[in-house]
Length: 360
Image (cartoon, rainbow, N blue to C red; front, side, top):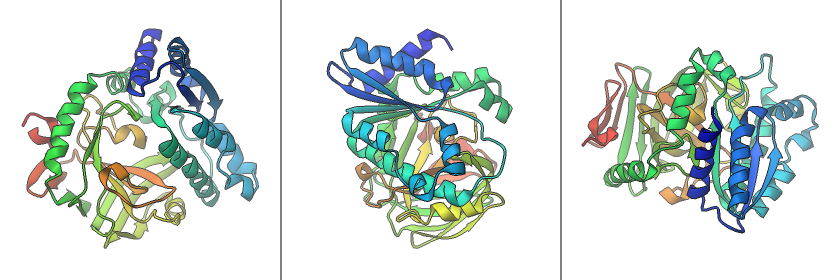
């Protein structure tokens, strides 16, 4: 990656988050691999007359806390991170894609730690104009067997884009979906209906999440029924979850099954509000095509759909509150993958329709 690419990314963030003279910007960095884009943003903030402050929140520190911290410390939201959210106008997190470390996790302690991190996330969401950047690494490319150039190219395409045009296209799709009452996700292993009447669909186009490209809403709290399966492995907090199936009735999660990570999932959903779906999202970026096992990127893949257990977006009309907001992504690019909103077909036989791609 060249400095020119990082400079373009920094410009995108600074413009999207209206960083000007006097703007206070807190920045977190999770690994040395994320330092080049963070450095470019720091320079851009100072260039504009703002004040940038940087915290290191390396994921290795999280693993050390799980291994050695006492229960009270593990359950305490990071005080410096909370203070940063309270101080800053804008928060930007550069999160490097670091492969999970081999070995056993104490899943109960990981769940406690993730709950504490959820409090920081809520503070970020409530107190700041925020952006999260998921930075690809050669190590992650090796982990999933994809050339790093492919991963990097999709990342840049999903970060630095003509967001005005993309946003207009996705806003038009959202306006159409606002008139529908329910969404149905189907596949050979899935049949889930989510009621959405009266809720708003919103586009995400280059502001809060990078790479970006999705539309989302908040299903009715009591309007989710059926089951959804996420085959294969994906990663959460450094732990592996595999072949996850979730069953819902009357909006509540009633059963969890997984061939790996089931105890972790059962712990996570004990948080208040975490047994309801706070978000239903649809990936819309045509340049983001590789399923990486990283939820933050995979939810942008055109042909994917995702749900988030826990906190709902109030801008969609959602009211569910939780310290948890856990996105889980399903790839519907299969021969039996289908996504419909009332009688509008968005994905059919694994292929995004012209309605979803903006050609109709």
